[in-house]
Image 1 (cartoon, rainbow, N blue to C red):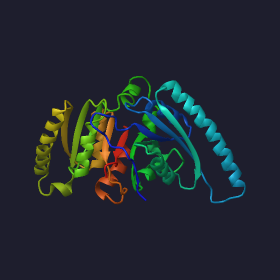
Image 2 (image 1 turned 90 degrees about the horizontal axis):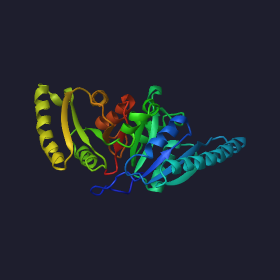
Image 3 (image 1 turned 135 degrees about the vertical axis):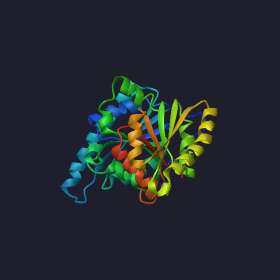
Length: 303
């Protein structure tokens, strides 16, 4: 089954009005919740907690019931916390049990009709995520049309002061948009230009050896020419834009440039068919997230 977001982004309107936030009630999750309540355009948050369901029944069911009850208490507390942070945001609570947490997250995203799933990932632990397994990775790589934002735990732990301002209320102030010039990646760039609060867009193309052929300089020049028209279109929308062409692997160059250019967000496209379907760019998305210290939004809703 393909799960999908239903909303599109009309001109000038917020694209991410309704988000799903799977939480484990950890300190990073609380900090991230504080962050996403200030992201421009957010109107509704669905708080989700999934208790892992065991295949062994009997006494295990009692433990699961206790866990669900505890989750209900925590979710109500989180709802009160959001109301104190931003009373204009509507909050829905959802708790359930499931043996397959990533699948449940995607099902709930479809059920609630959200625009974005926000999840944090412990990058240092090879994507060991908030549910003690590879949840963020699997959510990204399974078939879905729902957009996903990954917040590295290493970043979440520093969200105070100016860092908070940059990566929360001003998260769209400087967006890095990698592109392979495919139709879907160009659509993603167009969408990025419509985000509320967008300041500067940095377009990036990485020329790989397989693309460059005999002379990488020719591939670089060709990419620079293609970027000229794109930058002109964005400039006509009063969006400050610059384009960068480098030689190297996208999964290495994207996080490197994101850090070097001090961007507030990496904005990438990926197919709705999962990482393996789109071997070149799909796997690159996964690898970028593995190496990024910046938030990454993966756009899939137009697929």
